[in-house]
Image: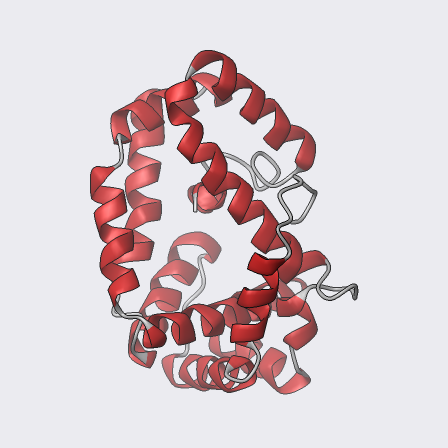
Length: 219
């Protein structure tokens, strides 16, 4: 989740998605704050999933999310999320990834509480200090950005379609400065759930079974 701190503009998308930058951050943490080694495992998992969903899956390019986008989904996302032609592909892949998360949460709703508990147990001040030190940003700015990021992951009922519509409505307004057409956004998300319902398990199981832990460029 931490690489997506870029949503708040506290860091850039390249800062924790590009291989070179990730390896530099890993080295910094290992040398200065080894107590945060669990964070590095999380970043590694995030990187691996991003690679399979963005870049390459089953020896084919692009990855699972981008390969799953259909023309109908792109049209609904463009109209529902009110995004530009340049942005619609990225937002469509977000919808596909949300479909995977929706099905996983439907399979095991307790995961939502697990995420909340993990966030509540996190050393937020220590993490904001670490990130602020590495990225040369004020600690209080990082702390505020972390709270914003984590709120997107915890405040919505993501086992329900309307919870996802609520999330995208707020996320689009916050990040893209765009107003959402809720009816069309709902149709876009319904379609993404339909597209992913027969493939999400194989995607997750295949990603885990790969055992791939090599840091890669993936955004």
